[in-house]
Length: 310
Image (cartoon, rainbow, N blue to C red; front, side, top):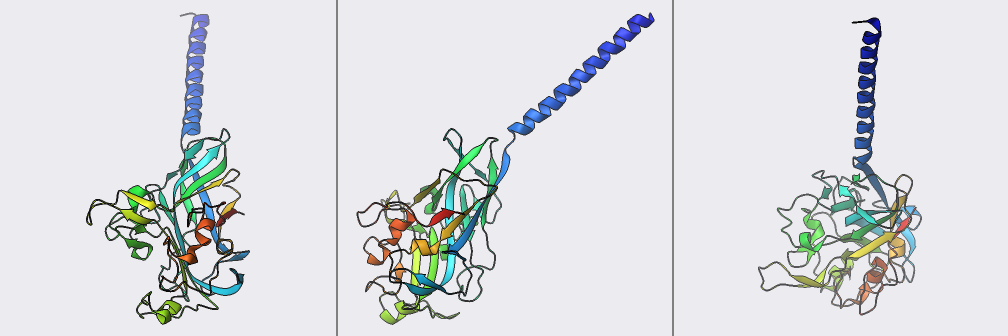
């Protein structure tokens, strides 16, 4: 073999190897670009411009203005989407962590079982985590509540976070999508550890319970007492939509003060549960339910007030 032919052979081999290397690099870059990207959506619980803390009191809440002390602050979100630049809502695939997220449901929990927060857990959770296809996203959309398909399970055998009996009403009604309990100046919460819960029809017992805010579906029906409900006349799930949201910089704030705008937390309609437990006949739910973003008493919501962006 001449030196010229040997050089040409080496040159061709080098070029082939280089091309293969470049191709592999490009392939790896494309694969990386197409791989789902991690996303974290942060939440915070506030009362106006103040952070929620178990045992802290807050002034100027409701109408007329009162002093409150919250003792629980938890809620479920589901169907989380990021909205791309074309306006398309792309679902976030939630991390299945076996604790806070299951399928497309996530629990946000801000109480820490200290002070008056007797019904919750010591652990807290203020983020929703998952993955999203690569792209540029500008908005956020999610549902406040548990989807119908998961809402009527047996909470005693359901996976976490749907196994919390303190966030469950009954098999027929389903879960409490939101549980916020508080005592107010006019309705102090005086239940102590180990003390039985009051009877709602009893005026003194109802006063002990303070003012409860439990959002969930009502008027659910089925073909029989032991059959799964087929519908709920009042689903009471709110779609929360933020056209502009930056996951790297912004936080979704759940604001109890805004939720209680126009609500008198110092009174309770006679012979009804303390506060609002989503009953369509309970005047204490007006306008609180519409502030959640759901219709109530034949009146449509003018827009939710519970959530805002910070």
